[in-house]
Image (cartoon, rainbow, N blue to C red; front, side):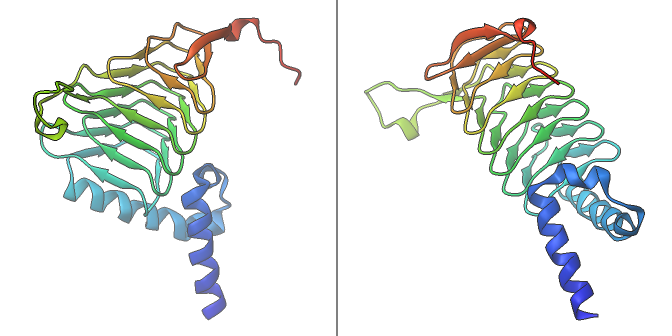
Length: 208
């Protein structure tokens, strides 16, 4: 019995950091994983202003905070990995993946992420900025928030950063470690700090 309990605990850890595996679990594993997920999501929706769609995976080690007026809406078949931090207002479309260590704060302007967008590990998306006047300490100054919009079918590479006021078009690709300070067009491929346009996804003909 002990070995069985230990196995489940390890499997839960594996799913927490590789949540895409949840969607290919065999029935014998779903028999314990589905009730486990149902309880995690039920608890979140009871404690915070959160709406969760059908067939989602949210790691037990994910940290979601959504006060009234700063809600989080999660579409169907989304996955949120361990050590991710989400503070509303945030709206996720369907089939959005947020991998481990990501940090998202919607400020007052909101973060909106379109369907089928994939966000790799340790990505930072902050929809607010502090004032920077030299007349007073930064922490005492008012923050401002324009909001961030990320389109559908976007791929955001590991350790990228996206600043307030940016719109990323549909089907764009953000390179690993890129710092996005300006809008990205549909199908645009950007990289660097600050991120610059280096290509167009429609020109790619990757081998299958």
